Image (cartoon, rainbow, N blue to C red; front, side, top):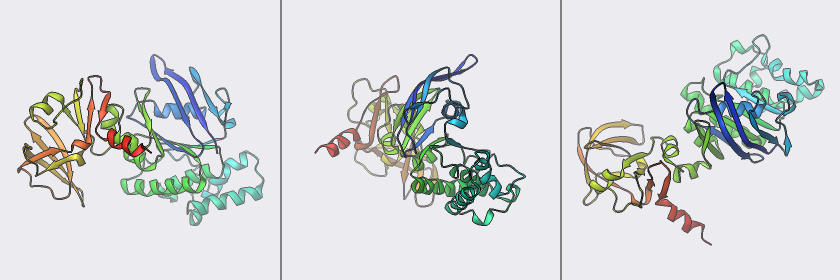
Length: 351
């Protein structure tokens, strides 16, 4: 496998600046997910790593070697696209073998590698079928198999599950996690779906408008977001944000750090139906999700979402309190000033 370094990469398309000096190091065997809204530059960055886009400036380094000027075929990276990109006239077996034949791999080794990939991805019964006779999930397995047989230095995935329905996406996420564990491979994965990012990644890089907002483990981004953008983008439902004036007026928070413009709180830290001196709220909507529900509350003009197991009825008046240990404070620029759980993390880190 490989280490990979993106160094001050800039890229423009005409007058539009797509990447604004991205620097990022990916460790050997890491599953890094690039996540962000459409148009943030994440797919462009992946294509720059693959050599499919020419950089305006900066460098791509693989295992210590600068490959910025190298052709895609010379970088030893395998890319899986959302469109599957299978040859329709070739069987699954032939699709898996095609790239190896182009590299003049010995026939006996091709047979071994194809069988190994088919077994790993559980597509052995499909080897003699044409792509038109496969489901979407099966086609994506074949596309991944075609990358696996290459035994590349790293795998690049460009929104590979976006064409699948919700059930298949869930199944394929499990397949990808299993594949990463079996191969101990370096993987870089692009998605706009933060659920995919949270479930797949060893680390997540959040992008916005061509810039990195934060890089960290899923837990770090969820518990300690660097700014309001990350706080709202990571997590379902998104973090509640309360203007500082409302937090004071409604006595939802006892004290605010200097410079606080917004107070953030996750849905699980909004407690409903108990608390002395709690704020009075009305239940507007209840989303039942099986073992839990999302309760949409309103206090005057302020809307909040709580996560709970036994929700009150729509239209009910209820009290709410905020868990003091789950508060995040942001300044007027959107940057995080402080999170209540910073203290707990610091205490756990002490010897």
